[in-house]
Amino acid sequence: MKPDYKLSVPFFEFGPKAYLYGGELLSLMKKIDSFAEKYDMDVIADVQTTDLRLIAANTSERIHVYAQHMDSIPVGRGMGTILPEAVKATGAVGVMLNHAERKLTLDEIEKAIRRADEVGLATVVCADTEEEIRAVAGMRPNIVVAEPSELIGTGIAVGREYVDACIRLVRSVDPSIMVLPSAGIRCGADCYNIIMAGADGSGSSSGICKAADPAAMAEEMMAAVRRAYDDREGKR
Image (cartoon, rainbow, N blue to C red):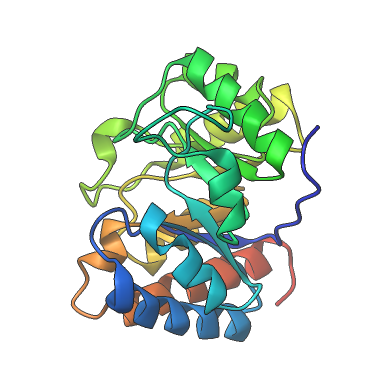
């Protein structure tokens, strides 16, 4: 059964990958937490497994801490794997699956989603091609991250046509699934354009981590998400 999970729209996703960890990551996350309050926005932070408890214990409920990966194993044997129950016990509320840098088979994705459902973790699943997006949406994760793998980390943002197509595709399978078109997000303008195209959220990894001032870039992007959503919904 899908866990009872609430995430406000629009939302922001920050994936530090392996760029940031420990105290440096926590310092940035506390600033992002303050921006979440300022812009009335939930933030998904998919952090290193070793940092899950650190970030979950030292940020507000606006910060939704996710693992960057999780295995579908049961409690027991499984040296070197990441146990769903252990992720949940850190205070994390979700898990990211099938990122281009940690690809899974469709069978592995489905098993991991079901295990996440069992322990009460939300799922955000990455997909690339139309075929993969359709297949992943059919597994009913909470969020589909649609991103062309060739654009990840390039600074070349996904285009309006791709965003439109992804949103329509996911909605045709299950309108309740949130959609996060991503890849190549480098500034607030990219975030604004994605939200105006109909996305539920926007986010960035290297665009923030490699910025001269990561906190300032995170705020620029989050402010753009809020502004775009309010413009789109006629709230300004």
